[in-house]
Image (cartoon, rainbow, N blue to C red):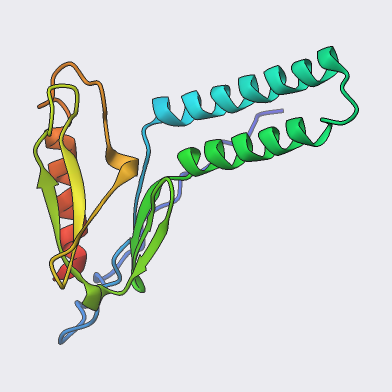
Length: 171
C-alpha cells in the first residue's frame, strides 16, 4: 500500500487584492521593552536565595516571639524581587506605561514629549533612556539601565533602535 504525499498549500490564483484607497489608519504593534535577561535571572535567583536563607534562619533560631519577622522579610524580599523582575516600558494605543523599581507611571500620548538618550554619568554607567514629559520633566527608565558595563558605548546602538520604535508612536 503506497502512502499518499501531503500536498503543500498553494497560493490563491487570480488577481492580487486591491490596495486600500485613502488614508486608512495603520495599527501599530505595541512596543514592550523589559529588563535584560541577565537582570531578570539574577533577581529571580536572588529572591530564591533570600527566601531560603530567611527560612533556614527561622528554623535554626526557633524563636517563638520573633516568628513574624521572617514572614515580613520574605514578603519584603518577594516584593523587591518582583519589582526588579517586572521593570518595563509598554507603548500602545493608550499611551506609555513605565514600571520602574519604586513607581509605575501611566502617561497618555499627549503627556509624552520625547524619548531621549542620556550619556553615561560615570565610567561605570551605560547609556540610559528617558521619557521626557510634555512639560519637560524626564522619567528615567530603570528597565533599560545597564550599570557596570565595561564598554559604555556597547548598548547605545540597541537603545537608539528602541528609541526609533518608540518615536514611531509619537508621529
